[in-house]
Image (cartoon, helix red, strand yellow):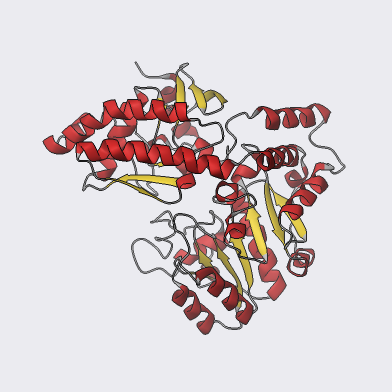
Length: 440
């Protein structure tokens, strides 16, 4: 019997191009035909799907948005209060001023703030401001920064199958719909490869508007890398924009750039800032941010009150609890326990990235198939798991223990499948999609 979630997803694929609004939430990314596509309720680190199944989320926690956990009571209370008082009107909400003051207190190097409601559009705002400030066009990029034209333009001039962005999270992104006129306006360089940025600066000394980068995603900066980036920006008179949308508050209160002592010209926050409610912020130095006045950057729903109210409540709670320390402990327990289980069974299981942004992968020719089988079997134990783990404040050791107990029952079958060579026969819906895979 088909589940309610699967039935609804079949309808969705006929009505919505791609089936979902976010690539990372497609069931095919996890386990085709098995992953529950929709939820009815979410609380803490548990969700209830449309069939009433209660599931422990040991996967992506809303793509890293719910750092405090789903439906955090303090954040929800602030949101409900703002909704009951009216979330939109012809006037501006005062929370946006309070939020600006709170953000600037945490980041003394910054002086002004603009808001958006998603990380991708906030990055587009930041790049627009940087280009307006220097009256230049070219942007050097390092990391994943969303779906907008300015970013995907990097793949317009690609001659390889993966695209020039293949080292920046999602390989194979076609720049269809991105104007050809943007060719060579976005130039990628790899993290910890300062020489690649140096080459861009040499080739475009008077045309480089900005260097846009994640201060970290999976790797620690090698000595001198971030300092070198800052120095090159100073030499080229280019704006340094740090994308804190993913790393954000997970590694350090206020962002990873503070942890590493990096002073940018602009920093962009999203995802965890509103703990599941749409809000993003672009903060920066006054001399750079004022360029927003000479461009057109404006949108009706950037003025609604729920986002700022949620962000204020989130920042208040983040200030009172050590979330980065908690994530390091929780993720460390998961890595240690799962790693020991895999080692005893002879499975090559690899963990990469910061503990707070854990990436899990099987080192095997059939890695995707093994990951799919693991996901499917863990679902039978009421646990959502995939190729990564975004811990949250709501996760406790008891949740890790439950995850490890279930893994202890599932991993032996994985090992047996490797030994027998019959992993594909054990997966009911087929192997999960890797990267950008179009639905048919």
